[in-house]
Length: 99
Ligand code: SF4
Ligand code: SF4
Image (cartoon, rainbow, N blue to C red; front, top):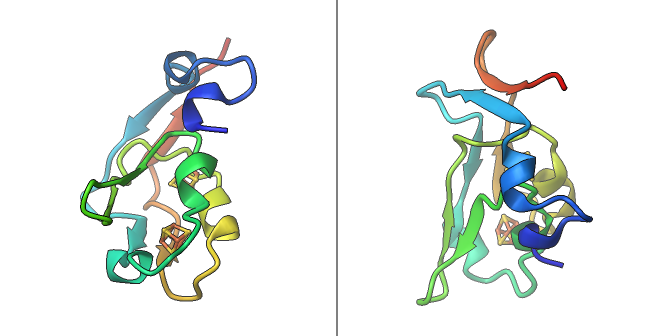
């Protein structure tokens, strides 16, 4: 399953459920040097915001700005030291829209 096919909800509709108040301090950091040797990369299909993007040269790009703060990447990652996770500072991060 790819992030584009999460259930019946399109990627665009999913992203439209939230606004993001981006802080300059990343609340998630990814040590992409560790990711180079990750054989399965479960974070790529698991992230509902499609923030983990493989590159053609075998690397991985990550962008924290549109993160839902769901914690799934942290849970599925098999490496102990690849993902650093903390909550954004107060007033920043995801804001889910009503209705
Ligand atoms: S699952 Fe973890 S180690 Fe593997 S590519 Fe994703 S962040 Fe990197
Ligand atoms: S916390 Fe959720 S939305 Fe944010 S990067 Fe991880 S899987 Fe993606």
